[in-house]
Image (cartoon, rainbow, N blue to C red; front, side):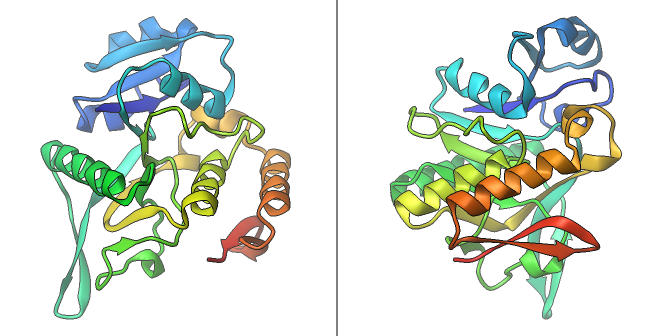
Amino acid sequence: MLIAIPSKGRAGKTKTDRFLGQSTLYVPESEAEDYRRHSKVEVVAVPNSVKGITATRNWILENTDQRYVVMVDDDLHRQGYTKLYSEKVKERPMTEQAWCFEFARLFAITEDLGWKIWGVKTEGSPRSVYPYKPLNFRSYITASCMGLVNDGEFLFDEQFKVKEDYEIGLRHVEKYGGVLCARYLFWQNTHWHDEGGCKEYRTQKVEAEAIRLLVERYPNRIKQITRGGSGYSIELHF
């Protein structure tokens, strides 16, 4: 199993590799030595000709012989599992060993279903927690923490500079009727608060184009909405 952390422009600032010591950082070739000076995990240099997160994800999938690939973002903020105590949802952190066990278990369930992709809860909204239903089969997943059975069937669509994870998840739902979502686990990142990564090109124009493509491709699954004052949010229907 490969635990891959794509990263760019964050040498010495990444957090996920400090928690997941068995992970591998995938960074632009021009930044590889700088990352190696700051991180204890393996650092793989991605050719500078590979531009953007979507192309980087595909390069990772195409340049490993591992059947099971976990993609996690480099800016881990908080992680763990949720459990119901006296009608209240409580969150508890997990160890790296526990996460690796869960990754392996989710791949086993995914294979048993005959599917190829799983994800965990990566958003902060309490509405996304299902204490009575730890596994959900009709939802979205994000590449902040996503597992892929790397047999060549699913690659990310490079038309999508962002929201590439939504697209590949919806494509999986369209083909297999569902996708494995582990809602008893949570993995949350800082995203917009950290410099580097996708932030340098993730503009409103890029977001709008990705949403337009999603709505065009999956008209019965997606609706563009305004949330928190932003018109660049989407709502999924299953």
